[in-house]
Image 1: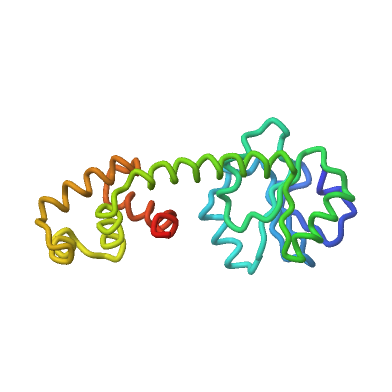
Image 2 (image 1 turned 45 degrees about the vertical axis):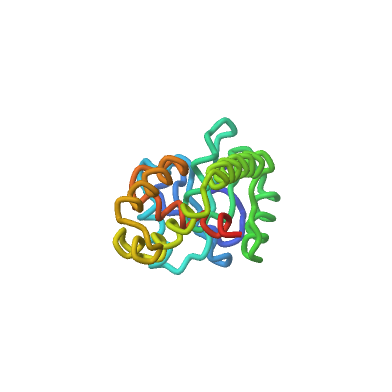
Length: 196
């Protein structure tokens, strides 16, 4: 879609007339729109996030996405609320912007299907990992996540610090992490599921 020549309401693009539109703003919608070509080339997650915070944009839309692109990585962009392929017509684009402004998400069906399949696979892997944990290992994980160090965990569970280290080593293997930091990240995402 040639967004700079579109009659869409109040779309302002930040570019030279000689180049493809890379960044646009749908002012009445409070949406920042970024051309797929600009991702990871002239911008990063941090730059987009900072720009959106500084300018007060609530939503991010990525447009002109090639149909054959890897869409799995796109979901990591901050405040991403919509995605439009290169061939998206103006009516559909307008409907998408209006839906996003109303608080809805606007993604092509194949994109949501791909993301959902990845999420379900990750959830199944997490379930497999967590189902292998013993009750004692779950207690150790909960204490670790609460901020306790090995000595305090040992005191709380009335075991030796060496036993805590053995538990942690086994836990790290079972949940496929390499260190305490990764274990804490795993806990943040998955511990509530394990505790149920």
